[in-house]
Image (cartoon, rainbow, N blue to C red):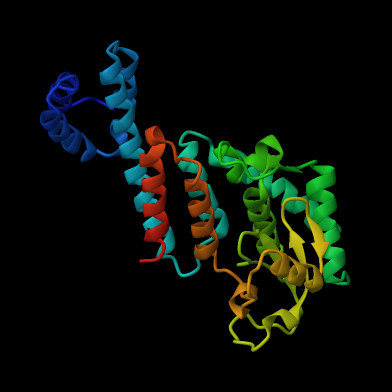
Length: 290
C-alpha cells in the first residue's frame, strides 16, 4: 500500500511522549483500517525505542480486533451462522495470519475419511465409534486437561494442526463434524462440561419436551470421544451438587457454542498485562447476545 503523506506525518508522531497527542494519532490511524498494518509492521521493524514498539504493537492489535469485531457482527446476522466460520473467527484472534485454508483442508480430510466409513444402516453408537476411531485413533488426536495458561489449546487449530486439544477444542471439532455429516448429535449445555448428545431419530429440536433427556440415547465426552450413559451424567450432577435442569439437555445453537468458547478462552488472559485481551474477548461474547 502506498503511504499517504498524512500517514507518514502521523507515523513521525508515534513516539510523542504526550499521551493525549498519541491518542489522537491512534484514533486517526484506526480510521484507515487493516490495510495500514503492513506499513505499521515496516515501521516496527525500523524502530528501536521500546515504548514506541509497544505502541505500534497495540495499534496493530486494535486494528485487527476492530476488523474481527465487524466480522463477528456480520457472522451473527446470517440466517444460520456456521459453527465452522465462528470457530475460524475465534482462531483468527490468536493467529491473525494463519491461513484458514490450511484448517479447512485438514477438516475436510477428516470429514471425508469419516464419511467413507458411514452408511445408512449404522446405529448412532456405531456412528460414534466411527468418529472416535477416525479422530482419536487414525488421526491420533489427543485430549489434554484444560489449562488456562495454554490458550492455543482452546482453539480449533489445536486438534487440527498439533493433534492436541482440550475439551473445548476437541468437542468443537466433534460437533462441527457431526453437523457436516448430518449426524443427529449436538453440543449441549451441561455445566462445566463439554458434551455432545446423540438424539433419537424422532427428536425435534424445535419442540419443547417435558423431559428432553428421554430423547437422548447416549453422550460423548469430546476430549476422547468415549460414550457414557444418562446414569453416568446423573452421578456427575450428584457429585458436583448440581440440580439437573431440562435446559441442560437442549441443543446449543452455533451462536451459543461460540459464545461459550469465547468466554472460556477469555479466562486465559487474567494477568494484569493481558487483561485488555480478556476485556475484548468478553466484549465479543456480549456482542453475540445483543
